[in-house]
Image 1 (spheres, rainbow, N blue to C red):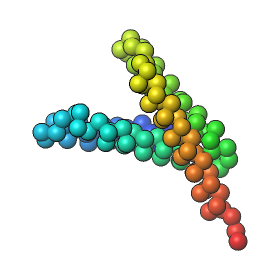
Image 2 (image 1 turned 90 degrees about the vertical axis):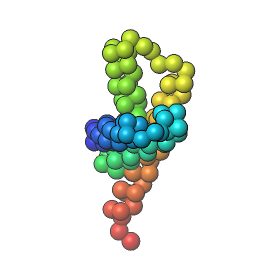
Image 3 (image 1 turned 120 degrees about the horizontal axis):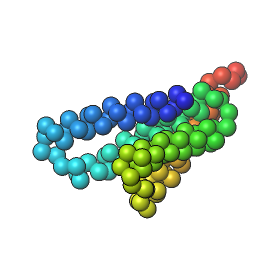
Image 4 (image 1 turned 30 degrees about the vertical axis):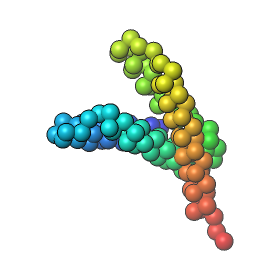
Length: 119
């Protein structure tokens, strides 16, 4: 749950920043496409990392669930709000989001576990 909250708060803040950049500068949306994608990956990685660190076990599973639930919420809001299904490009992005969240969960578990070990 903490991971999902982090992801959505990160998305809201980064969306606000990008909206302000697009509104008050001459930057076009197409020129920020890769930056926005990278920031999305960072947000999903952070959410998976936080989830895995809190759980301290099975990081791949908890990170994957975090990414999957995020994708499910986005899918439901798009389908119910805009009456559109995911296209092939969006499916690829959301599979990558889930994999990135899994990697974050794995790293979160390993860092949280290594900090609690005594030598």
